Length: 105
Image (cartoon, rainbow, N blue to C red; front, side, top):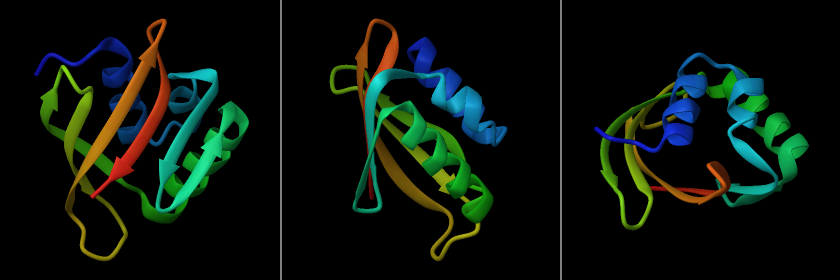
């Protein structure tokens, strides 16, 4: 699967539970929407992903990618009810970094 470099880096960081590397995939003023909450800026994003990594220990396995819409379809597994699930990761990229990420079921 041919993913943009920063999306590949984000997947790698997630699967290694590396919150700092994950956060470095984002622009300074990026936003993440997940589980009904929005996290704004790198500090909030790092706090969110660090907590999620410790609580859910989730890994993502890409199963499809829509290049036009920048949507990654991934099998997400971890310590949460219903695992594994297929989630959609909606990306907006800017200057090679993630500007926005929305995670939906």
